[in-house]
Picture 1: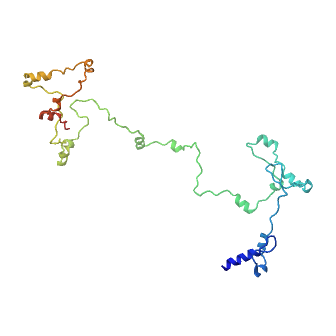
Picture 2: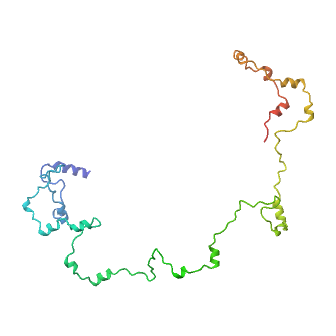
Picture 3: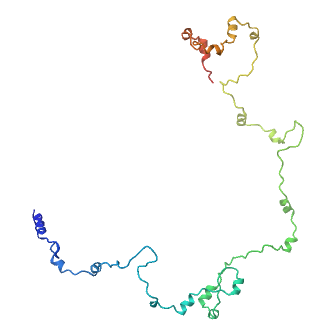
Length: 274
């Protein structure tokens, strides 16, 4: 409550437009000395409103000073600003597009220092370095007059490979390759005999039925019963012209709905197990 009344009292005596502060400044703040940094920050910002800036290149922010204020370049600057010139003989005979300039007498009569002479020495090669041999190698007289031994001639002959896809003609009873005497007299071990046995079939194996089998004598002399003859006759179906106008053509008879198949028909209706 005290703070509220104090704020109302201050606002009551506050008058706008004078130089008085809103809050009473302390004695320490009145006698404080600003630091150089605060003084630098307290300086007002420069006014650049006098200089008009536009987006075009024709106008400039600052006015260009007169030519009188500029100094003329020296003779040295004028000489350095000249482009480098090439000699006419060099332009005619130079192998590549590169500049060339004459060497001054001071550079020609210059004496190199010991350090430059040391740096100018070529790199020392390795003691075991061998220079490249010439392409056309010269054959020595000893190599020209040398005679190859019988062993070298034997090794120099090409390797003869036997043709294994064809064999010489002989008797039909003769073997293609000769069997050694030891192979003919060799006795196979029990393990070899066991491995040489052919693979046996399964005990429940049933061989494939032949496509054709002989007809028995009884079947040839059999006489068909009247019932078999009746069943062997082809089914007679009415023509489609009369069936399409018959409304009861595809109806199932009541007797067929109540029929019971025999044990034989059930056996024949079962799928074949493979």
